[in-house]
Length: 174
Image 1 (cartoon, rainbow, N blue to C red):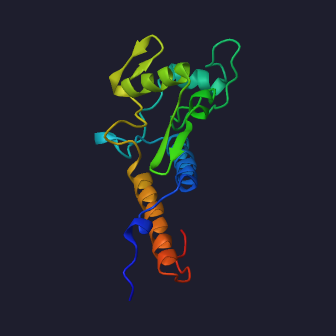
Image 2: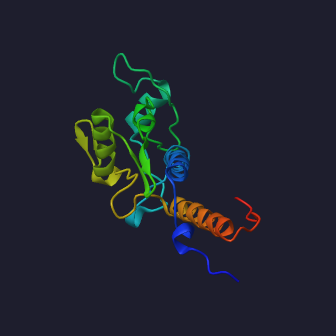
């Protein structure tokens, strides 16, 4: 048996991280918008705190937006950080390289709204019990998504081993 070139085994390229980053953004958005779950610390996996009765009523009626804005979501059963959709639409892959990827938002207005959700500040009202945390330094991704990213990297390593040893591809992707 030949000893493989370990530098080639752990070598990644920009297209790999671009694809992984794009999939990660989509799945993180889904985690927030469809499941309405927190991603960090003591709140990992817990549903976001419910809407206030007044906001729930306005959102269901399509009257929760400011004049001139278009309301995209009327969902009131699960808080999903989607009223106009602009904040979550701005949440995207920002860059990738052969060492990884970065995603988030560069839109100052949408970043401020996202930060407000993180600290429980909604317009002029602050309620730390209503925090809807999407990510932070310690937990940038939900646990299930962290596992998918690791699995994606592991599959790439297996592909690299197969290429280094000139083996036929045998890995089934999930």
